[in-house]
Each structure stands twice: as C-alpha cells, then as structure tokens.
Image: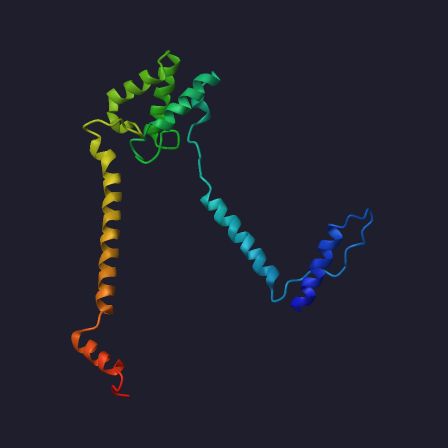
Length: 198
C-alpha cells in the first residue's frame, strides 16, 4: 500500500516538473493517504490555524470615533503618547487599549493638550504632575521607582543561582551514591582477585 502510494506521488511529481511542453495528463485516481491520514492532516491544519490565531497579538484599540482628531499629525502624536500612558483602572494596559471611562478621559485630555499646542514632553510632564510616575507604563529610573526596576532582574538572578545550586547538589549526591563503601570495596576486591570466590 505504501509503495504504490509513493509511486503515484513520484509519478505526479515527474509530470508536474516535466520539461516537455505537453506533459501527460494527471492520473484520474485521487491520491489517498492510508489510514484516515486526510482527516488527521485536516485536523492538524485546523489546530495550527487556531493556535496561530490565539498567539497573534490581539490589539484592539479602544479609541472611539468621536475622540479622533481631524489633524492626522496630531492624532498620530496622541496615539503614540497614549501607548506610553497606563490606564489607572486596568493598570496593565495603555489608555489606548483600555475601555475604562478614566482611560477615555485621559485620552481626551491628551488630545486637548495637543490641540492647545503642548509638546509631547509637556503633555507627559502635565500628566505625571497630576497622577505621578505611575501613569507612565515605563517610569523613569528614580529613587522612588528603583525597586520597580530592580525586582525583576534580582528575581531572575536569584532563580538562576537557585538552579545552579540545585544542579550541583544533585551531581554531588549522584557521585556519592556511585561510590562503594569500604565493606563493598573489600568484597569487590575479593571477587576480582585471581582465585577469589566464583
């Protein structure tokens, strides 16, 4: 069964890649995979498609049409700034991605300041003065935010050190368990020596 399947597949490949202008027509018998392989292949395709859809970055903007500025340059600046600002309700989303009413208020405030002529830095400074560094998704490195910046690297270092210590302990235990006691070594020597017990 497998041999005939391979022969048919090879024949189709030869026809497809044939240099002749008028190749023979394709065989009319369909190429079938033994043992329900078509269903398995279809399931794999569906599974991969679903997995790809789930793993794709899901980026839905919460900006409403009535918030969008008429000036495209100002709107682009507002979107860029909104990606740098934290939603005070959601805390792990930018205000551009959050549906919370406070995020909407912040988006409107950003646009209002831009229309008044503020630079990007002035807008950020205004919001930091009003809400503190917490409003920034990437707060600056300062004495107040030093803990925030150092906790993650410290935890990573502690984890690596713990893994190294555990690996060394396992290795030493394995080496110790492989050694023979004095009594076992004597018995082994007695067996190995010529004329020892058979």
